[in-house]
Amino acid sequence: MESIFFYNGEFLQNDQLTLPLTDRALRYGDGVFETLKYAKNELHWVEDHYFRLMSNMRIMRMEIPDFLTPEFFRDTLLELVQSNHRENDAVRLRFQAWRTDGGNYRPLSNEVNLMATAEVLVDQDYTPRSGDFRIDIFKDYHKPRSLLSNVKSCNAQLYVLASVFAAENQLDECLLINDEKNIVEAISSNVMLINGKTLTTPPLTSGCLKGIMRKRIVEKLAPYLGFQVEEKDFNPFALLKADEIWLTNSITGIQPVTHYRKRELATTEAQRMIEMINAQFG
Image 1 (cartoon, one colour):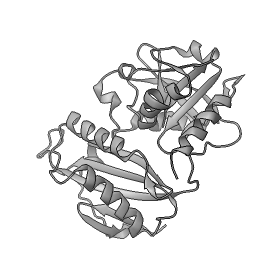
Image 2 (image 1 turned 120 degrees about the horizontal axis):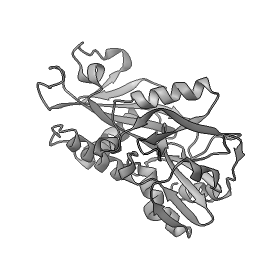
Image 3 (image 1 turned 90 degrees about the vertical axis):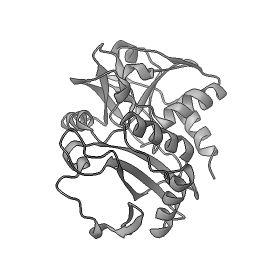
Image 4 (image 1 turned 90 degrees about the horizontal axis):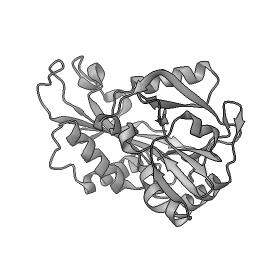
């Protein structure tokens, strides 16, 4: 697609960006970001994404500019789509905030840089990948349990290492565990187990990301479809008893798992939920 991006108030071509060697995102991953979907001529759950961004910036003690309002956030992303002439397409949007350059671990300022980028998606609907989808558990490193673990941060070492492990073992995704050996989330998704009409997902205290699709399913969609929702810790043995395993995020929606190790899983309830999510848009 056309490579127009937003950076600190301007819309630029992708070859117009220069960053200093002291840039804090480059040196320390000192930033946060939101990834959301534009499809069928609208931004999906844009308010949820905005308020999570605000929450994460406060947790990271960043200075939030007065102009960074819900309207600015929405209008900037829509203008970015229009600048790339993709109004009729599906687009993956990323809005990032990171501290301005300078300092070592102690920053010289808490002011922020802002950037938004766009990438064309194939499907307007939330569409899981077809065919087999295999997962296992990444055990080499654990995800900590703290407020920082709920933040969508630019520091992604654990996810990168888990992704390398998945590639080395011909897996489509990996599940992460915390220091209590409980399941936390997947590399790029929250995780949910289905047993009959009970949906179980790790609580935020487990260290999982505070996902937008997770929030929507837990608070609105699952109860509407008659599920009893439980936010509680569970260990890997629960995966062997689940009827279905879902991976959820703001771009795919729900990716049903077909195989955990040698076990084959159903996907019927996932398909029902996906249809309901898609029915909300367009």
